[in-house]
Length: 95
Image (cartoon, rainbow, N blue to C red; front, side):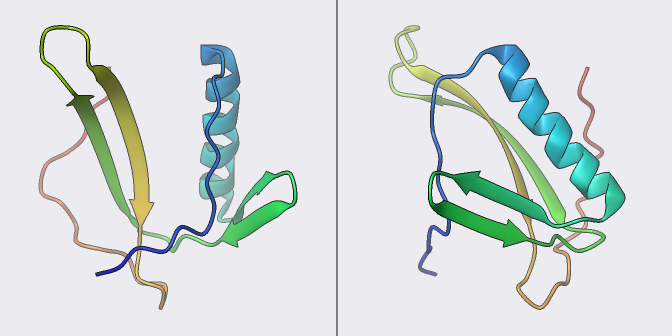
């Protein structure tokens, strides 16, 4: 299935700055509000349903000798008709 990128932003940020962005997203989700992403003249607003699919991935790209790139990805996914996705059976824990 082809992917269309509606918005993209990538920049080096401090851990505190990233935490601020994540808190804003968390607040919008908790309040049931749309999430609006803006950067320069680009903007997109998205309205996750009450129960979207939440995916968390930890990845290593490149060599396994310590010279690769590590990442943690958080993703919310839902059908455009507003329904959520599959309900996973494993309970996520972040400690």
